[in-house]
Length: 96
Image (cartoon, rainbow, N blue to C red):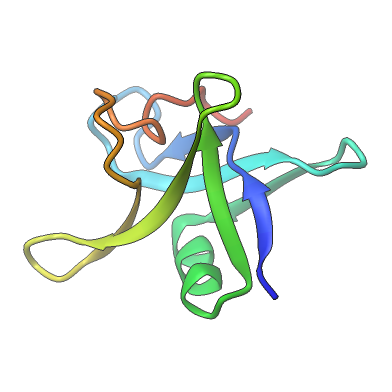
């Protein structure tokens, strides 16, 4: 059974470049502790069926985070097509 987890922040490989690829995603556990996973850890967890990540923007509107492939075959995280610009995942605040 996969755990449903809300992604609340992202960290980019180059924090000052808004076009930089993701390094990690993060959020808050029900007990209030913060969690953070590298993009590769999150991809592995999705592929193994351990986690289902989602972004909730605006409040109440859940969009699933999925694994996509770039033109060169590299895997990365993005949200399902939701007609939002920019991608909901990339519009999240920086993890601190």
